[in-house]
Length: 421
Image (cartoon, rainbow, N blue to C red):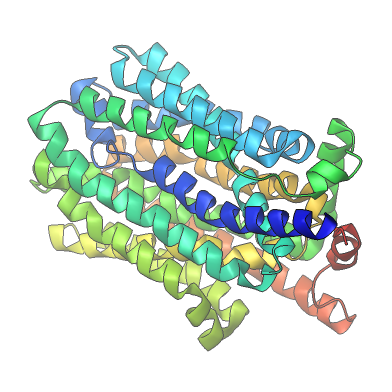
């Protein structure tokens, strides 16, 4: 009977992998992706400053709720957290599409941010623990690369077909259809199998889980600096891409063709996500870390210095880093955190990204006041200075750990003890 139960568990954990792929595909297959900035600017009449100001409560909520919702995932189950995330996301997207004033759209952004906090950390933690309990822990980086590539494929398809559909129907139609697709992810999460430690182990008190996770992240220098670095890279890769659509519109690209122009950027993300392991094997983990802010800085300077439609190719560099960032960093971070607080501490990483991305309203103001080129210059400088600075601090802490025989980081020993036999 015990043998049969173990076999069933292993099969269920194996199934979690493809269910994780399906869940993320449905969540990323959003038809509004190629038109949402133009929708808010032209259809709702908002300036770029107003559009980016919508992100202020969005990221503030993520900063305040990311770690608590990560603790919810650790305390009450990762699949429960994913179900809440997909439900809130579907509601938020639907309201976003039908709202006719700034206040209601602002409310939808708040629900949107809450949805992302329930998903963030829980998805990666569930995948990692499922692979580990299926005896495939070493495949996590490859699985993460595939997952990010699949997410990029879903977004790419949404970009290619969303803009033409919007041109022949309406903005509201494609946004509402996207909400329905996202809602389909809820039953996928429901049928996932919860990793064993959240079922068999004595659950830690909620606030203790929260406090311990944050303390461990801060008290481990290598983890602390790489989380800060991750936030800065997220800012440099994602924030400037909010302005892809206005950039293309300024250079005469029609609504129906917006997707065709943006698709190669997503394609670059797919390629780099799949090649992340190969890339690390060639230049090493440290080299891959340093390559990210340097690439983003070069792309930002190119967009800032050349005001021609063809320089849109610089967005390929940003898209490539957006695709490889998580696969490159995920294994490093996951190996340094204990299983029972994995979702909580991965949420700490997301908080760092949200803090950095909260600068988007400043980017919108600069774009409205001095133009898009000035905005690209700001992000290039912030990414290079901040990213390389955080890496130098991490590099020093990492070398200190290696010199003292802690090559897996300060949490390696506790992580090993936390793994159930």
